[in-house]
Amino acid sequence: MPPQNVPFRIFGGDLSGREMYLSLSLQVFWLLVMLAAGRTMERRALKHVVIQGG
Image 1 (spheres, rainbow, N blue to C red):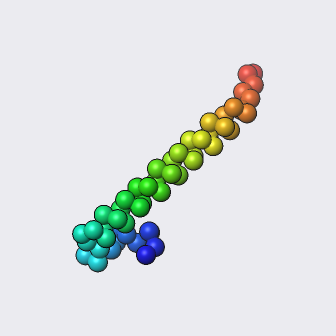
Image 2: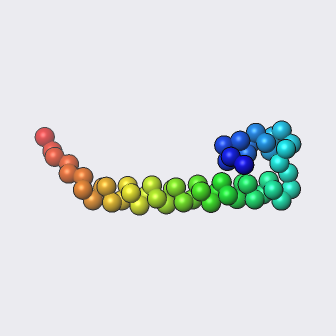
């Protein structure tokens, strides 16, 4: 089941009960993974930023 159609499937009534909660928890898991990866990459990139005054 592709994750991009989970909200539509919930709204349409195709997903309910345990399957709905599993699908939503999988999306929350990937949201947290991507946020953590983004923050880590941002911190590493900011160590290399040089700001020059003018």
